[in-house]
Length: 268
Image: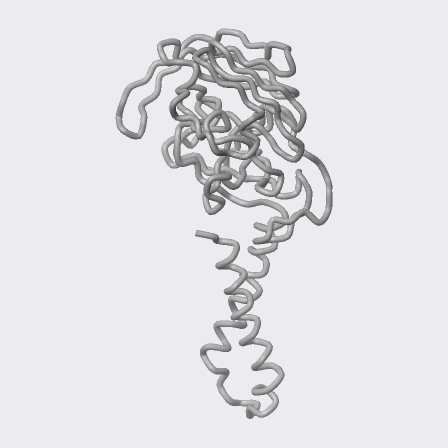
């Protein structure tokens, strides 16, 4: 569901009703006459819809985390806030950048439109920038030939939405200016090669084998991975994220019904 489009249509409808009444019907109406109920609703809702539309389009937009692919950074049920202007001002609905402010950086947690189905919003961590060479072999991430630093930090247990109990190894990874936790399951293969989409754009930039993969990120694209490395459907399988699909940078958890301690937690 394209919520921005729905809000835009509601904005046009309520604004049209209000403007039409103001220009054509109000001057002919007796001063003590009752305002038509449709016009009254339009006058009440138009300012509210306008404010919400502008806030969601240009400042901050809320999202809910539906899966465990970003564990332990983000949990299922987290409600997060996404900064819409960090990576530039974009036109609502069209998502066309009109003012350049900044660009995604290594380690940012970013919301974007899923390249295989732009009606879906995904959230992953930025691993590769345009021109980078990303390699993930034998559970070790490298960037431009340099191993990304990580340090073992014990174990992490969680229950999947299918009620399966999972125990993973937890590592602290340093990627760009971000220090964050990732999860790795040693018993899982580094990559399920048979699940890789062979048709994604710039597929020729990637080499896959039983040990993992190496990809060169093309200009105007980004390589994304989930922090839950062995339980994430990400760029390893469906390819690069074009700049035009960027929604914004996730920066804070504002609510979680199951864990109130997470409220106000900034996303690293």
